Image (cartoon, rainbow, N blue to C red; front, side, top):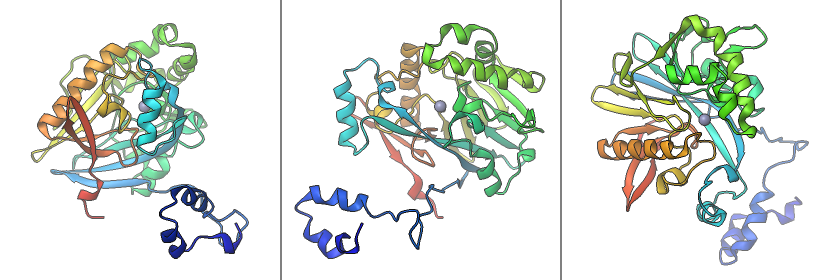
Length: 331
Ligand SMILES: [Zn+2]
């Protein structure tokens, strides 16, 4: 954009009454790639660390990916969804889904909860390993990997396809027995809609090679480590699992994909994402988890909300409101 068209602070203030002028001007502010000061491009907040009681938790970004908004509320008229998105200044056709993965240091163990999508899921995701290294750890350091469910953005980072070996070679693995069976038999291929059948193929590449290192959790409430409890939260997938993390009187609910959007999931827990396999079961689970988080005033980690995905759940009328928590901690 020519220099004489760039808006100064003075002209922005002058244009405040004509909001329509503001957007094209702001859209032209990024420098082109061949400029003397080229833009760097990708966003880089790769990890975010905080304390929960005695535990140190690092949220690692696996990157993000785009989804069509047609997947977001299959049981509601499309206009209801698009007007909610527009009211919140979000695009109405696609949504950007972040992938926020917690690494819990209990003081004696490093526990990673899901492993991201690896290099073959999405070009804008699969960054977990580089962000893990940026946070000061190596893949070999991980003691336990808990898998919340078998979707690609959560498990396709398990096997390094170049090395044909586990990416976290010294870890033992945990997944619910129901989830393991769903993805390692033909059940997933039979039950998934056509658009999602590729998920079943990928799961069969990533889970069976780890069979001998994997504990299949059969009971909700099982302790993965002192203070870390696996709760069955079915619906998104049949054996979906969340974690309740307790330390020093503080609680973090690792919700995985029970909630996926900062407005839709909280203001309208009855709107059914098409990515939930058993949608009525998922709604029941979502309502239970939101009620628990609001009642207990527990912190929640949401995987697909803007990085780092940490916040609280407040009651709002008959539903809820997402309250991001990132400003509560010093950098
Ligand atoms: Zn997911």
